[in-house]
Image (tube, rainbow, N blue to C red; front, top):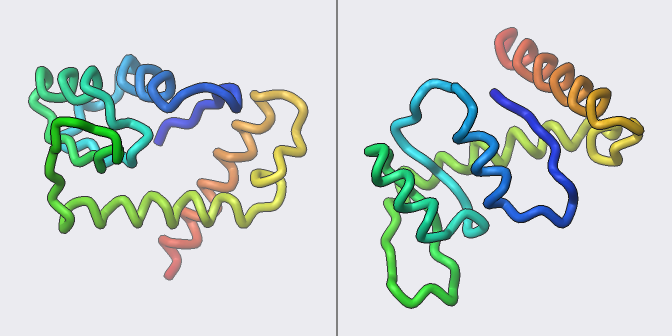
Length: 119
């Protein structure tokens, strides 16, 4: 898992570029919400032979389908974010610096992971 912080007014496209430019293992599928529905993102993923499952924006002229069975896996990611936000310190961003905020997000993620392993 990779975590990073962008400014509140930053578009999802910048977050996408930050993650995809990193030297993480090559994904096989990209599951994303409407915030990532851009022709540039779809073309980049198609050039890298990555299956994209991105819900369309309502204003999209050229309609693109999505496999709803595969897209349901996004629910797991959303649940992970919900568990992270249950940690009050993460949800309210008490920490003054981005480094300490990211560190606490990592600690909370590890705590969730260990709790998941023990069940």
